[in-house]
Image (tube, rainbow, N blue to C red; front, side, top):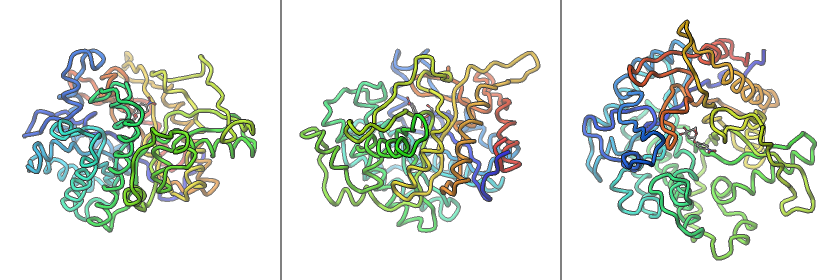
Length: 444
Ligand code: PNW
């Protein structure tokens, strides 16, 4: 048994578009993702989360379930167009939903961790140019101010934005996220720059309106780990983690794009001002990193940066999606490198996996593959804690099976099974495992 530090935050995470449903209820507006899903062929099986898990109607049940599992914190995001269905037009019922959710969590003794933005952009902002426009970043800052005021002292923890590269580059580099436009490289870097700015504006807004709150990003810096642990390989992997994330994560942590990166891009580099870089680097209290997998490297003095990647073998174990290559040491090195490079305390803001879960004849779901995946990543995280690397908590992705973007409802990421016909929740073996770890504050 591997003990975690006292007061370690054992959490669970979801995002509005993936679990709420109720997308046509109580005056909710349209979002980029909802309209994208409405186009046949964009999403696997043409799935659409109009109802999905329906947390919008079942949040009390989900809060009670988390309480039973002993979960200490719930990370959820805001559907901006539910709250502002048209520009500057407030939907009171949409706002009330989130206030009720926060109240229900607090009543159950579960700490709310609010993600201001997790990919679902109001359609009216998409129509105005979306993330190609710097103004979208400023507007997200205004939205964050509004929400922080509305929540007042009740919310003490915020994640600014989730995974910048996914909602910026992902929409413009052929990755098939809305608005699904292919831009030249220079424009893609400019869109990423606007995503970096969105984080900065939100951080500024939260600092000003919620000075009591602890804030930080939930980003997806690509983590590189040493293929085995020699001092040279560890240093090489740390350098790789800094340089490979130059256009986004490193820029946010350092307030500048690394010279090597700007030189390499030349004319394709994003345009930016000193003032913008200051906003991007607004000081935050922690860095949240979403971690599912990692790349391997070794030290190589001959290579620029002093590292060389080692390809993962075709049969390298993966969970139900091919990118979910199992590299459990990613939690340890992610926390270590973020601390050593930038002095930041971390949260694992997402970790988990999809599996092809089936209910057996006894009504049970023995998702031992997921259990083993979680145990591996948690054991590595415990190592970081044991070495006094500051890690505040861990958010398991995900509480519930949910809508996995382009992959629709097929991949099941939950520790709790959802029957989409009845909306019935059934905790899997991994949920009981997680509850047991929480109870003993240890990795079992
Ligand atoms: C994250 N990849 O996305 C998101 O924050 C969640 O909304 C999502 O459901 C979860 O991870 C599981 O996918 C990712 O291809 C999507 O490497 C794709 C990748 C990584 C993260």
